Length: 130
Image (cartoon, rainbow, N blue to C red):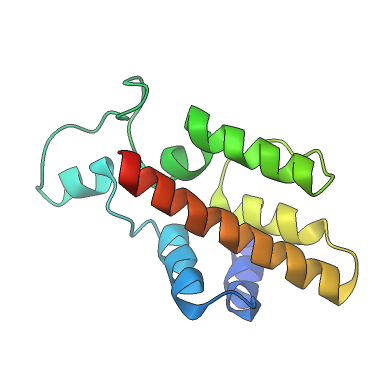
């Protein structure tokens, strides 16, 4: 897993996405997003359940990949780029899977940009509707 993490952290800043988008993705990878779980760990609130489905804890992985709404967006995105990717168990794997589908340097950079756009767009959806 260290090899995967090293790949992500050495490549995430090479994206053509805006620096604020890349910085947000960096914080997401480090689990520094104010989810209900993270806020509860800091003594703010005590409700950790997902606002949409009331079944599981609202952590970064759930909010951006495994929540039904986020998963639907992920599957539509990979279908749009012509791939068939499973829902990844981690952000590092989602990043490396997406970038790994690219052919050549331009293809990889393009898919890296799409991954960043997905994370950024999900953040707006999540923080507006949660």
